[in-house]
View (cartoon, rainbow, N blue to C red):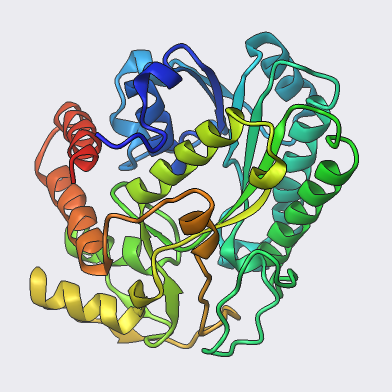
Length: 357
């Protein structure tokens, strides 16, 4: 098995804090770290987990979660001081573009103050080696040209409240790296991750979860923008990349690993909504949808370069567009036919199978 952040000898008994561990990406990361033998603690809002991955976790795994608001400085500080994490993966956020328009104040508060709270709490601590602040590929200044392929040095300034809040979170990272953390041994990184496809995603106003709800929950399907293109990637590819960055950066004093990182599949996997529908239509069953007026101001084109992770981390994605769709569809199909216990075991099998692809 290739050693790309997956080494059990490295992760065994490492203290790892995952904020937002009940969400789509956070729950897969949380599960994977437990499989690797890490001492993992989650910090998340206590909200409905119906039909997502976290909902099928057994009680003993769910109990490794502190329920709290990332904006609650004192509770978060107490959690961090008591647990003393060596690694922090910060995924807690308001993650939806549509919700950003409905409640911009909440969106900015969560996505800015959450980051600021964690970094401030750790400014005088020595136990933490690595922090990954998960932001978004939407943090870039995007003039909506199909020719743009953004790299980590490009200008950041998202237009809508969600995207802009993630741009602000990136600026906070930059300031702490250059000043407050400049002489500390904490590797502070940010993840500008492309659109993620995988089992358990129940996000609102996102095309793949909407398609799964259409197939397995008998929901009607409405399409806002058929030809919008996005830098799709498979959830397990992304989690593996996060783990690899964390391990590699913590084992060296080189500052080359700190700062922003784009995570995305290769450009040939940056596909449109139409491409996704067309593939699933042929693979599974016919899709009937209605076009709706797009009241959410979104970009039509978004492409980010993964050259940095390929060259500096020597990282390669395993799944292409069709494979990530097939794997994700299999998870939702299995969920529709089996118990939560069986789904939990199936999810572990997905991770273990991924090792050997």
